[in-house]
Length: 136
Image (cartoon, rainbow, N blue to C red; front, side):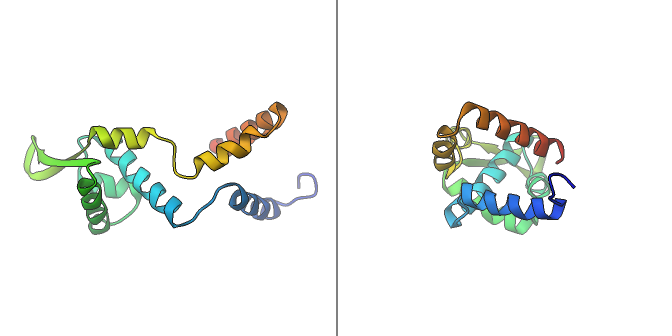
């Protein structure tokens, strides 16, 4: 135990605090899912549907429908894979790259909150984030 808190108690407190700091409404969830798909495509370009599905941990039919939406929005382009004519390759468009480069929805609210913290508090948060990242 650290400071009288068990790992379970710390987990509960962390989840509660995270909800206060980061809004998680439908808009944020949709943006997070879109960013996850765009990232998976970017990391595997030219990506196949199966590669993207595996990267995001969803089934190919669901990913295919989501990719259709991204294609209609002009964020992704589908083309015939030059190595295999029966397979489609996915690439980000310039708009898709720009969308991925922009901060996530809701991050401006988080940024405003963080800007109000003292330097020492920011450093403590940075250290905590480093610890959490290492444990993932």
